[in-house]
Length: 157
Image (cartoon, rainbow, N blue to C red; front, side, top):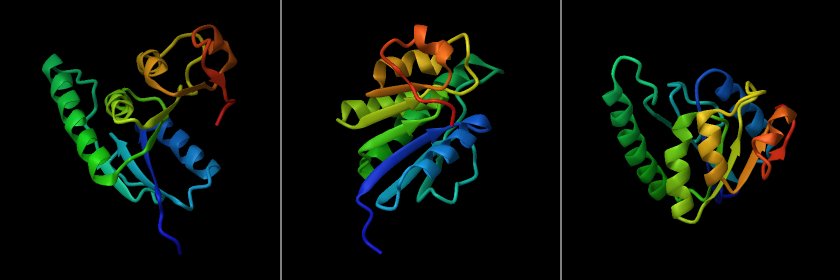
């Protein structure tokens, strides 16, 4: 087996975001790709070579919890991108993707964002921000084309 040369960061959330991440990986040819994952889901997918559990950004009990979580995600992202020499990232929709996407873009990496399949008539907060950050932005429902004119309809995963 040859050495895996491409390093992909996959960022997803629990639930539907995780299901979408699984579908993306299954659709890609990742035989020469090492996949590093960041998620608020504690279980490491079988296709992930290295998994980091990120704190959820939506702290309902107190506002300072979101700031602490963002700070933790910031440092986790820097560590992962530097340690694993990440060159690209795919996000399937959660807000935890914003910070690593910004860092990776600053470092010259490529970012692809897939707006969640659960959006039909409104933009998600993550989608609004990732639309500005991502090199490529895909939405899964045609009704979102008016919100993301430079995005691409990719169909449902």
